[in-house]
Image 1 (cartoon, helix red, strand yellow):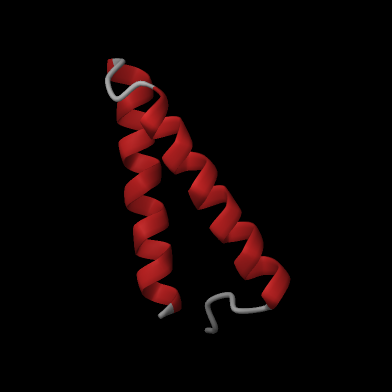
Image 2 (cartoon, rainbow, N blue to C red):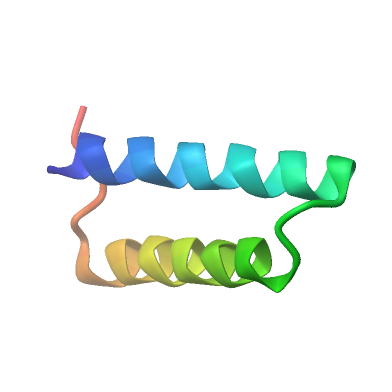
Length: 52
């Protein structure tokens, strides 16, 4: 499950980066980035990070 979450995080970050560079998506892309940051912080605080 952690791998799926990290894959979603990477995809949203790439979409945000493309939106930032190409100027499309407006505030929706920034909202998605905030959701991703919240998920990362939640995973770090709960200790559900990816295990190697």
